[in-house]
Image (tube, helix red, strand yellow):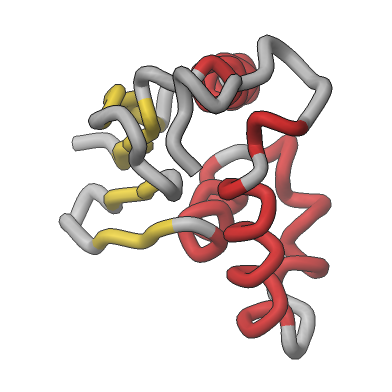
Length: 111
């Protein structure tokens, strides 16, 4: 059984981000599930069934993808567990303002 990444399947920013993650998933350790429209945070479900969301999902994801190992010291730095979720929520709420990939518009993504 593989870990699952659950994301807003209606959000083009989210889909594009997942495509990037898929490219980094060289050994196929993850399963990708398009969740409901308006899913405000990415979710990571471990093979054992433990669920994480947002920043904490990203932390788990970093352990699965060797290309993200470089971020592990940063996302586990003391205080990152307090600041990280706050930063993640700001990015998630404002994802349609980011000029990367095919950005969400207010019409096709919920904040």
